[in-house]
Length: 168
Image 1 (cartoon, rainbow, N blue to C red):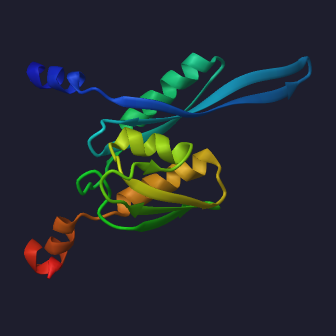
Image 2: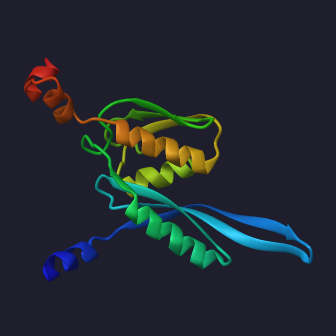
Image 3: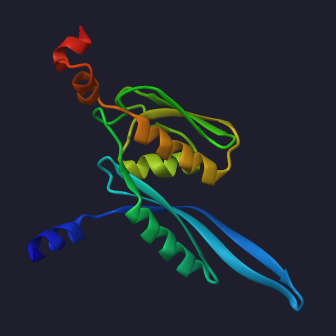
């Protein structure tokens, strides 16, 4: 049991800070400032999660965000260095379109989307944000897309067919 815990701790996770915001509360004596941080954590091999941390200081907010992200990880089905199929997902007013790309294309994305793709280990993908570009909603939309995505094996199993029968 001890050896299993050591193996888990050796897994190197990639954490990226997507957004840091300063929030002010107006009180009688002036303003009280707090910080919120949005972090994305992934293992670079198909697991990714996000977390939101709030605190009086920036480092504490980042630490809390990373801890929450590690607890909320989802599995991303991969097909080589890209995703298995196109996907459109939304959260709030943010819509995100994800499209698989051929090897060598790279990550065609910006901001919050790029951070998630790098953390998940996706190297070739085309993306487009439609509507709101709010990083919080974009991150949640992408996580929704990843949780709804299915690999070819899962589809074959669902249809009670062999993997080879799907292709032809």
